[in-house]
Amino acid sequence: MADFILHSDLNCFYVSAEINEEPSLRGKCVAVCGSTENRHGIVLAKSYEAKAMGVKTGQVNHEALKACPQLIMIEPHYELYLHYSRLVRQIYTRYSRFIEPFGMDECWILLPNLDDISKAEAIAQEIRRTVKQEIGLTVSIGVSFSKVFAKLGSDMKKPDAVSVISRENYRSLVWPLPVGEILYAGPHTVKKLADVGVYTIGELARFPEALIRAKLGKNGVELRRFARGEDGARVAESGYSQPVKSIGHGATCVRDLHANEEVWRVMYELSQDVSHRLRKHAFLACGVSLGIRYSDLENVIFQRPLRVPTRSALDIAAGAFELYRAHHEAGRPVRALTVCAGKLSPDGAPAQCDIFGDSMRVQKRRTLDDAVDDLRGRFGVSCLRAASLLYGTPIATDRCETVPMPALMYR
Image (cartoon, rainbow, N blue to C red; front, top):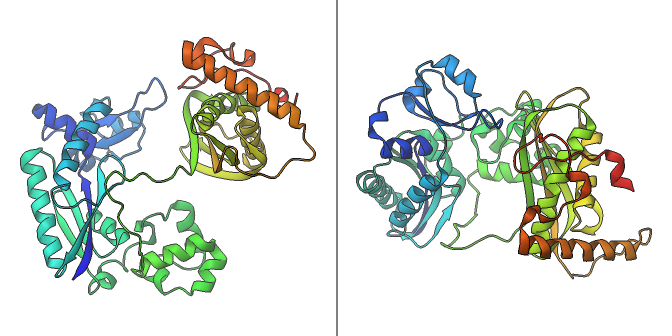
């Protein structure tokens, strides 16, 4: 007897849900797209007909229309997608109580104590048919002995298909694939691996562990384990929620940011929300990370520790701004920013004191932040705001309408 894992991926989920609600769209070039006015104007999902015309996920709206002039563009309806996601997961519960979501449209499903992988494949086929008949959506399912390979399997055949990756065939099926196909191998990791001559999953699997550790650290070792079929991660039981490890907030700006002052405005506004959620969940941040999306849509992420644990919006924004000044390439326009508080510790837990800081000033700021939170909880978020955030032209979505100067951070 053995445990097997399914990875279920709803095909073209957003578009499929829209077509299910409006059957006249079936067989046409359709894409669900973000708002062009709010700079979220990219393709979120597309039909297979649109894909055949050159429309790509993440493509800017006007580029998608250029590739496919007859493209029907639909704004997203997230409540509809959540509704369909819940319906499909109810079907999954007929087969297992171990269902771990991976976004709205993907889930891992554990099938314990089966004779062999053919039984798991039969259940996957049954799930595929049931989702199609009862909900009207199609799903691709990977069947394997590990979560990573199950995920790879669901990507192998689309739409409406089941793929099996077993202990007997994974070398022939998985190892020839580009290394970027494996879960958590992002573009920067792929580039670093290419620098040492690793281009396929098989080459990663055979690469010496000591060398991969030297190049990519423990994350590289973990990827190598994935490539070798040694992923021992379990599927979480339904309803399980992972401990909070970070709290962040991001925004896409309505125009590109060029000056440091503009960037600081957005960071400070984002940090207001991060700070509020830290207080709500009784956490302190011991580190901060900054995500930058440039106007050419390249994404970079940087992180650093904070001198002392904090939940202050000013401290978090200051840490993020230091990262920006240290790593930003001068002259590159910024399209979007994300500020994230990490390395969380419970508020009240023992912490190293800052012997060079003003502890009384820190305590006064914490008391002030708590009072502001209390007032906003009773009278609304906009009832009380920092004076430096009251003026200026809105420059980003999600309440980003700030205008402080960087010097204000240090007063």
